[in-house]
Image (cartoon, rainbow over all chains, first blue to last red; front, side, top):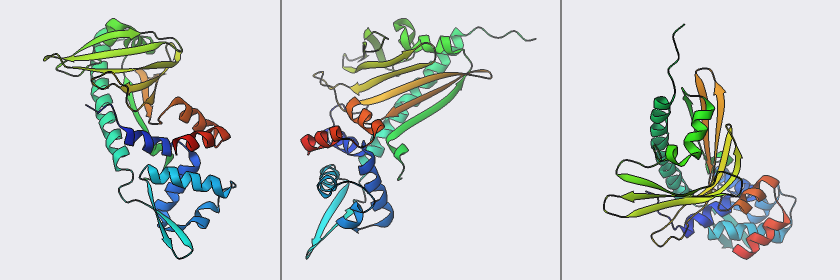
Length: 116
Length: 147
């Protein structure tokens, strides 16, 4: 059974619940490490807003940051989505088994169609 | 790996029963008790108020007396086609954990009903609404608080 309290999952799903932050993670997963400027380029939002999104992603364990001289870089963490995938897989098992039982009971409830 | 759908669970089934019967299986306590709990658990309906804003809470009791509860609030109740509710497991002291959203739809199909269950894993209805509405000042404030 899934564990109830999961502050880490809350942070992870909260971070992923925003289209801008998802777009950032998707791009980092494909392109590897990017400078903060490159991350911000596709978005018509302010620098501070991008910085805040990156903070949320970092706190959720989705990305990590690196500073090299005056340049700041970000990249996706390799195992970033593993907790989310684990949660998803547990839910899938839960609902698949529940729907098996629902289907069996629905069949018992439903009158058989007469053959014509 | 990099799709928005990664944050959503989707299950689809063709079931040889009409939507009305399936909808009742989700919304009538006596019917829900017949399928809700896995083997080894006895389900108990604490409350089931299938109306928008209504609460639901179901306890699963093990033979050794241990209990495990799930609970939430109904968002959409459109018999016999659509049902949406929030969802969270409770821990032993009754504290609700990570909350997600479940949507079940019942579409008539040849031979019965196409049941589609979607569970999106957003942390709150606020996050869900913000997601639906796109980037917004409200989210900016929320992330400011969270950060």
